[in-house]
Length: 239
Image 1 (cartoon, rainbow, N blue to C red):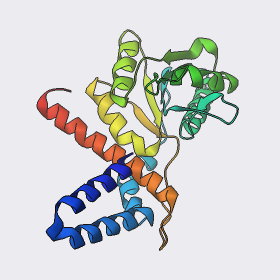
Image 2 (image 1 turned 90 degrees about the horizontal axis):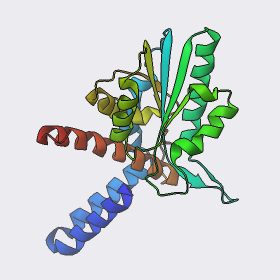
Image 3 (image 1 turned 90 degrees about the vertical axis):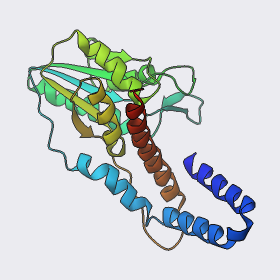
């Protein structure tokens, strides 16, 4: 967890740099309060999400492909492997777009992209598939990409699937905070999908710390670090 890593880093510097302990301690407490009370978390989320939330409605074509990105899996109280909370809006949004597409009597495909980075008994794509089928996505229109472990690999393997297919409209369904990084990766493989935000993260600003704000801050920092990593890797020629 990024927040825990930040706390550990501040603790290590606090122990090693004796002369500046007061300043380091004050800075650490201030950062923790700003994140947990929402005053720093909110602008971080806004920076990531605003463009995606203001994006125009997607345009359907005669051959439309809807790509939904995975967001992990978890075990529920009965021990059943289910999609994580952010995955459910992605599934619902992809199914809704598919229904809109079919109502226009178009050729519509849904690609679910997500492997098994958590090493659970099933991949993300295979876990999400029954939910899409129950939402009336036809089995012959559902494509499962279940090898990718990262957003970069999502883009890479989806590009391989689309390489030999013709399509007129390509849509990318994921959470609003994830769209900036996902688009960078998809552009890297020559794809220019229309972004569709399935859900957003919110911070509640106040005086008292909130666990939900720390969770949202961790998500935002993860995305920002991923974006920075993309630019570094591209500069080094790795991407």
